[in-house]
Image 1 (cartoon, rainbow, N blue to C red):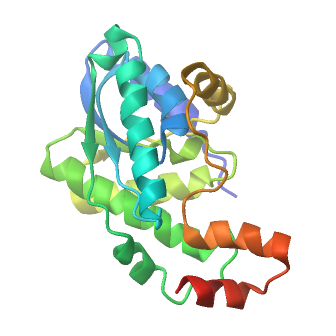
Image 2 (cartoon, rainbow, N blue to C red; image 1 turned 90 degrees about the horizontal axis):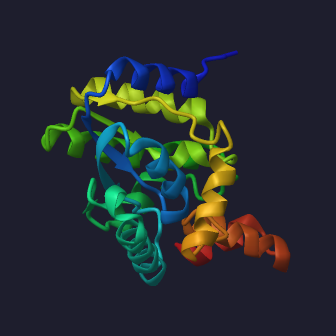
Image 3 (cartoon, helix red, strand yellow; image 1 turned 90 degrees about the vertical axis):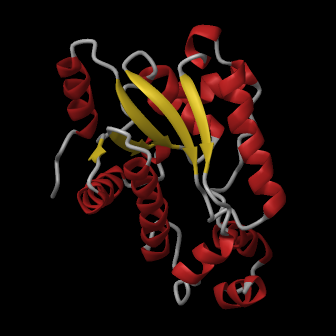
Length: 221
């Protein structure tokens, strides 16, 4: 069993910076999750929020979430916002659907999610290396429903492949998730009730309607 305290690693890394600000690419899954991460990190890093989420297969939903991310950055206090940039990755839901082909029936938190995490982290790592960032990380670890150990292992693996640093984290620790809820309320952020994947949304609806998982997947495909 892996007992790595990733949040402790992050705190120790920040302490060792001694005031030096490194360039950090923060992959964001959504505005609510990024809120507490940004509040925590902006004092220590030169941050660019990288929005790459091809798993959000409904275009209207994707655009809504992008707009909320941009609004949050603009509405943060001036001293914070002045230090935060925004970059949007290519919206390519077909790439996500191809990556998870054959995994349509997997339950939430299973192999389909692992492939999705890896897809997004690899793109973040590629962009971070190309744009000469010192490090990259993801807001995904703030969710109690996401496996921080898996995310950090994938992040470190990707960093090695791309030749860029990876900042380990477990942002849900130290009341991070609770703080994200508080900040979401403060800024009136849209808090979606599903991750973004059409399959996860359909699974919830299937449970309500009594449909089979196979029928849901076939309807999406």
